[in-house]
Length: 133
Image (tube, rainbow, N blue to C red):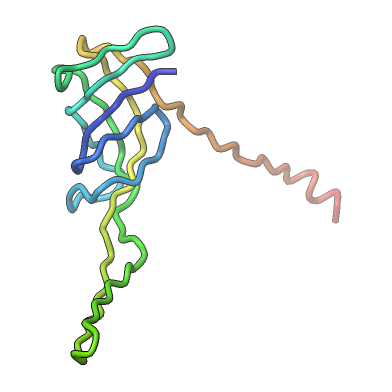
C-alpha cells in the first residue's frame, strides 16, 4: 500500500489513497473541488521509500474537498483572583475535510489511486410486485 507524507497548515500527515483527512481550513472553495498538495516530504510503499530534502520536487497528491466546517467550541476562561476580573471567550477552529484520490511520484507516475465506490441500485420487477398483491 503506497503512502505519502504531506505538509499543510504547518502540520505533517501520513496519507494513503482513499483516506479522509480533517486538516486546517484551506480556502473558501466549493465542495468537490480538486486540491493538489505539492509539499511532499516522503512517499513509498512496503518495499521502497523516497525521502525529500526537505521536499520532493515533482511529486504531488491530489484530493477532493469534501466539506468545510468548524470544530466544537473550546472555552477560554481567564480569572485573576481577588481582583473581580474574569474573561470568558469561545473559539471554534475552522477545518477542511479532504479525501485523498491519487498519489503521484516525482516522475508523474501514479503510485496509488482511490477506488471508486459503486453503489448498487435495486432492480424492481413490476411483474413480481403485481403477483404479491
